[in-house]
Amino acid sequence: MKHACRQVSQLASDALERELNFREKMQLKWHTAICSVCHNYQQNIRRMHVLFQRMQAYDLDENVKLSEEARQSISQHLRDHQ
Image (cartoon, rainbow, N blue to C red):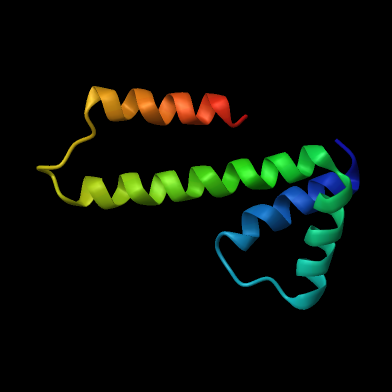
């Protein structure tokens, strides 16, 4: 993995946890515009982040569990969008 890609993958992860500064946002935006690998990585971690947040919300209520159908649907969605 190239050094620039390592930096951008870290920024993509950081963006899920905190507000990036202007320089970081521009670095992320420009690099993902030209690097399809990093662009796909950023999209995938965003999707996973949303899915994990939804799963965590369900887990807060012990009476609500994902059905086998829902689990399969999530798995299929992740496979389709790799």
